[in-house]
Image 1: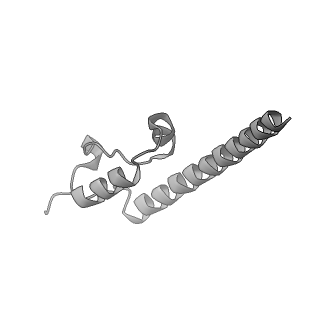
Image 2 (image 1 turned 60 degrees about the horizontal axis):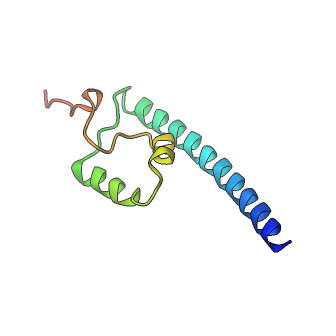
Length: 87
């Protein structure tokens, strides 16, 4: 009986967490789009320090889950993320 209850509670908690993660991921995408809009349509450029801080914050998160929620490439800047020239 206790094993069944533990399984049910665990399954429920997993569903609640997955729903919350999906909600936060969508909110993050919307905020990123708004920032890019305010940035004249240019992508957001992260500094090396920002990338390192986000990389450290993401330690311990399952890689597949991280891919679903992360809106930035934490490994290397994309060609789209090229730093704006100073002209």
